[in-house]
Length: 332
Image (cartoon, rainbow, N blue to C red; front, top):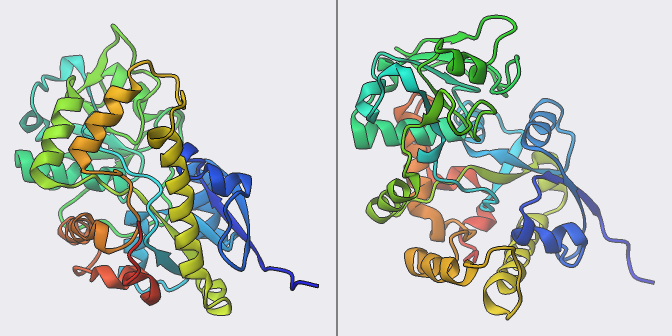
């Protein structure tokens, strides 16, 4: 009779092709049974950070860097990066705010759900390094995007010279932007008030061109999330870190084969083949590699930006973020 495999509870977003084989049970970490719990970002992050509710979970990269920099050792990171997004598209402005170019943001009132959010970190880095807009030159307002409330995960200290006020009680960022009480918003997704003919538009209407230019110049496709293990789970199961990394690699490989290699209509896009070929050419292969070395350039930028923006007190070494046995793993 075979020995029963340990069951690992994992909480994370459903990332479609990249995680489908894990969610269905088609792929599991060697020696373990994975219970994949598809949850929205606030639930997965919040329940893991506040209560350590899962054995493993998807987590904000910036929040995790803040924990590592602050000596919080509750979690061990794995170089699995389920979510990556360009953030130039997610800067929204009010039509009447007089913002035609990024430099016009200086001195403006800018809303965001969480100052330490990874999406905000990458957006601030782009504004600073490409357009000389410093975080200190903006008046920050924190609040819920489409409903009142605060969604900051960790309550980390603010950087020197940066002031963040909470939105007035009962108000939220999208509504304030629409009314002209905010000039701009940095958000992880479009606010509900962003609609054709409305008062809110993107700072970069032609954001695909801006993002492609950014990638060609920097070779950075920003990492938003990584996977973490609870430290006690990591210590109890010495093979789990590598097994979970390899399972995510295999799940993503199978999803990519469905989208790229097989002659199937995998997604409802009549121009998918052309988009696929463009992605192959731009990224030189899969845009979503896992592992430290394939992502070192992006990770080094992330730890540098976190320090530069005062989210951590020092520049972290990339290796500090991950289980040691995964650092040399080739990923894939």
